[in-house]
Image (cartoon, rainbow, N blue to C red; front, side, top):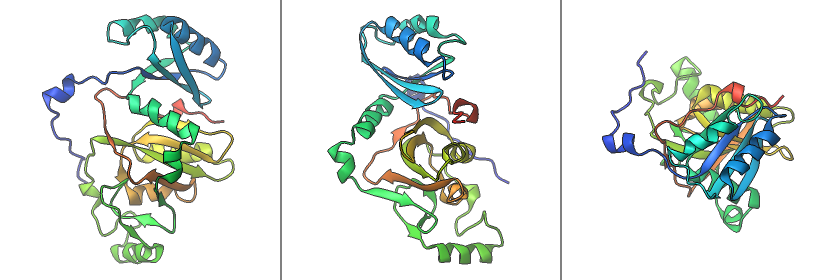
Length: 252
């Protein structure tokens, strides 16, 4: 079995710490109010706060009076406490801006074309892809029978490219399967942010592209479908961005 290979990052990439003022706050369900209140007090400016999961919140401090430079970021440590913010993660500004677009149901989102991944519409290769290609369920089953393994197809999983990008992916889940869907995605690729709409069967993640045949293990057992906007640009994975674990998203 071949190990996944990573190219050596450029020095400029290592020095490019992702700036901005978009933060993910991790907390217990009871710790959300004191965590958010503490952050608002430290910020002392106009902020936007969104519930992302039962144990996390998205905090947009773009209008905050304090710029979150590495030095001033230390001021937030007073909010880092087991009864308040268990973890504070800085994320790219795109995460906040995309979320505002998603929850506002903007005209752009209504008109944008979704590329949907279901059990009957299975992508080929790494997904989300640069080039859009799909095969039928029958063709995939034929390929799997000829290869002798459900984890092998016409492309070699050992050549999985190490994408340096992350991308916004929407998921739909069946009744009472939200946790299983997210947990499956976390188990099969790198996920960096999770949002679950508790009023619908939808949510989304920011994730690293992965082989479609690996992700298909989550469909339809855990996730009804996955989708992304076809015209959406992927963003570079910032150095130091920590991925989400199953312990970070306890839906139940």
